[in-house]
Length: 591
Image 1 (cartoon, rainbow, N blue to C red):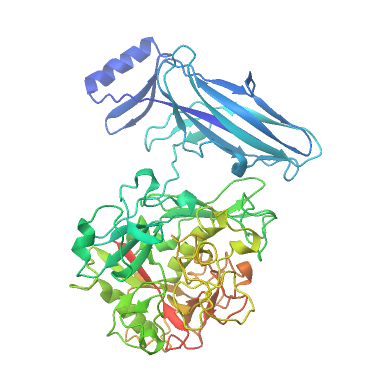
Image 2: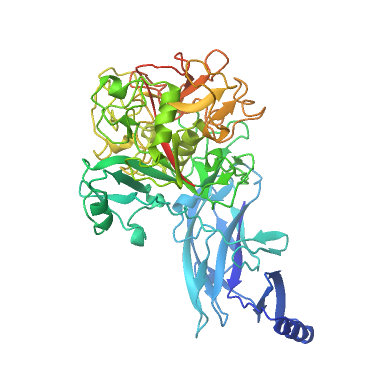
């Protein structure tokens, strides 16, 4: 059984002067019912005056209960009216209680309309009848008995980051909005319109640039030095020619996550609104995501039991860079290519070329880990061709950063939440191009078919965009198939054939101390690294690095069958050295 709790928030009054505070305390002494001191912060006191109240109706009638017949699903219209003489904020909260039977009754979030998800809604001050809002809720009862879901009310206040306890509960306003993308000086925000990338409005008015609820992740580019000023001065809506683009990036905003289990043993995500059956390892479900600010770093166990709803959130390690907490990271939209992709292997084992990130070109392969790492670093050298400033850091993708992309893709904000795909097609489509052309799609997930090639380019709707992490053109490509991608994930600082003279700074790579994925991170499970938590999801290969094979690769390659995919990882036989089917990806951080 679930309870819905309502939290009321009204406008605040700050009294800074010591004299006014003293006067307030004297007044409250004589009329305590009229003035309630809630919490003190920065020499200011927030108070609430008058009597807090609310009007609640279910299907037009005053009620505290939702009654649901056996083996049925019913809709209810809840009306909330503000009778107060000031603007009030009402927040709906869900508190899950262990039911007497599994799946006795629950509110189906995907069937709910106009219901704020811990964001609250302001109601105007009362006039003749007061302002009100209506919410439609679907409740499903899978038991053979009638159930009653009680509606409860708690009165509490929350001013910005203050929390007021009420009957043992802490109420805090929470808005699940992604951190705004951070652009370096010469990066240009883009969106896709009429088969062209065009300059976007960075104010994101009317979701012009991005909308993660619709799998529209923020994209940005850098252009050639000869065209840079023209594009920077151009108006919103100007077409950005692909010939002028040198790098393409996708913003992954900082978030915390929780992975659900039905039985408390197997954590395959929740069924939610996106699967037609209970999640399995072969067809996993939704990873719960909540966007957080750069000041938050959750350290729960990242688990949830669907029958209780209690969640433990964890903030991915990818958003901690050295001693800095990031608000997000920019990820190369495609596998890295070189400034001369027509060369053998798209570039080969050299640092003389410059990285590019574009579709429809050969990815840069046959390059060892140290050279891939160094060419990624040099992207922000002084005088670099991209126009990057000294405030950014470019580096070769770490395994934890790969994990941050995969978890967001397996959420309602990624391809899993894209209504254009169902069942097995929720998995990212494979790139089966034997020429390692970036952005290609086979039009279906990894499989045993051998008709290799670039069946669909990245910009073909559904069949092509299905190869991205969102199922839209706004996602990240080549994360299933194409080339195996080296990531900066290493076993116990063993160099192998990587050709480093000394290891990079610790912030640039993930170190794993055992080949047991349950103890590889300093003797503990590597949460957020897409290793143990998502092992074998979609039947993807799982082969952990070890003393003999110390460098990690991700995603599989075009020739792989069902084991290629977003959650694939392996220990490469090249030991960090050159191999014709190994490429890499680049990350950009705003420091």
